[in-house]
Amino acid sequence: MTTKPTLSATLASAAMTFSLAAFEAGAQGYVTSAPAGSVWKSGSGGCVRTGYWTPTLADADCDADLVPRAAPAAPRPRAEVAPPPPPKAEVAPVAPPPPPKPAPLKPVPLTLAAGELFTFDRATLTAAGRAKLEKEVVDRVKQDYSDIRVININGHSDRLGGTQYNQRLSERRAEAVRNYLVSRGFDGSKIETYGYGKTMPVKSCPDQKKRKAVIECLTPNRRVEIEVQGTRR
Image (cartoon, rainbow, N blue to C red; front, side):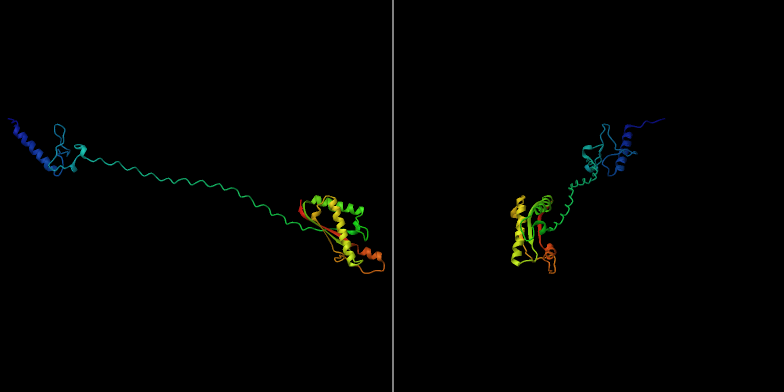
């Protein structure tokens, strides 16, 4: 004969089960069901709290509004990208230094024999002398110089005759050459004349009985030196 359990027996069994679950829950905040250990919910779907429940034991499934939400994961730090190097300043090409200017050429005096310009013991230019000056001085200076700073004309004589006479003769011959150059368009203010008489011979000749031979020997001393200073082309 089978005996049906009474209502009181059923309730007593349930109470024992509940008490056991509560005991097993220990310090848990909610009543759990055995043996799975999951939170036991009432017929209305609510979780049953234990006497140990505090807000710190709140479960997200039961009291979602009491469970602090996990802070969003911090973003991974972005790798610092080194800034691009500043553009290099364009360096203007350095112009090569100009070539050194050639050293100014030292003026070389143009020496003309007095015999080519004058007759002996005279200071008047001959026709041949003017032609000589035209070719050797006028044409050459105009061709070789773009600018004239000064022209020095130095007259010299031989030793025949007195000192004062030869000094004056050398000055007159230098002046004759200057006057010709001025007539050919040269600036007279840039022409300077000097007479040196017989003080600067370039050749010595022994005394001879024949005067003509002495005159011939002393020819190199009778001369006119022309020195041009200026800018060459």
